[in-house]
Image (cartoon, rainbow, N blue to C red; front, side):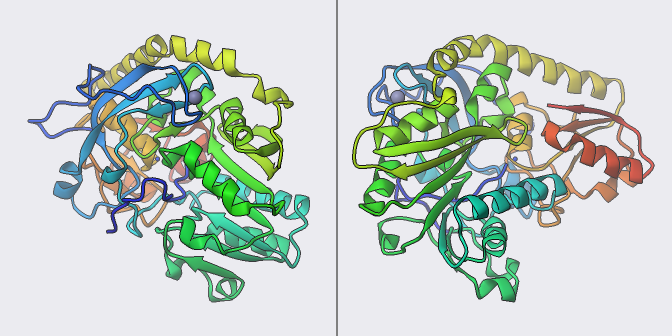
Length: 425
Ligand SMILES: [Zn+2]
């Protein structure tokens, strides 16, 4: 594994997903010895204040663990969530980039899901049309396994350059590899010479601590070129309003609402040209172009600062209720002798299980991604199995980690003649 030691270097495309050992206490919402910084890494100002803490959570949740002992002993750190009153940015003030190691040993891809593939295909088609990509070149920063870039280059008839330390060459068809070049590294100053007609960056910004510096670097790299950029980032407004603690984990050190996202780009001399939510409101899609002069908010979703601060204010109470609700739901099912299955073996599952301190209460963790099956969740050590395993150990309660996949999952269960109770986060 390589170690991430350039704090502004950027990493993987994390798509969209504790028990503890008997002697180790579960993650708790308690005071942490860490002293959060009060300067906002999004706008460089503040003031900021703490709205949430979780002690000792696994530093990665998409890392592939080959045995249970290693998964249980996986490194942990504290998470201290701060909100900035000036720009609405939410971030882990205790984030330590040196604890992060991104490598090819990651399984963040959601492309085993037809629901996700449908979304990605639709988006690729849309970007190809909107940016007239025929014969042009796209640079994707944090391209993960490269599935989206390949899709985009097919849809647009363009060439691509994808940069990501977690890229795996064997996951790209030879025919596609002729059109798309992949670089297994972090994007940074070393790649400033890579010119493109469109820069795409999906599910990456939330992994970067110094976001202001990252966007400033990108803006400087583009220089006088009017290269458009397209960013896709998880939306934090929903997380704040729902108290969605399962969407808060160590790899995600930066949390944006649509307005916060746009403010960051405007501050660094981008004109924000499009701003919307997609994928059942879970992702922010933002188009922007470099500009010489300062610009002002003009899009409806940018006016969310008051709403963000109000949601942040209410968050400690809302998240407490959510944690109590889900912990009791799972524990009471287990006490009643029901077999509880978590469906989705990604970051959300790691956060859900470790934050709630669940262990034996979860019988199985299911994931349809074959690259995750037979591997173990960092932190909790649960083994991830394919849906077929449920034929033998029939579930009574299935907790789905993302409501977007409920229909797809029900179909899979029906297909196996299984009819458990299905609930979604
Ligand atoms: Zn700020």
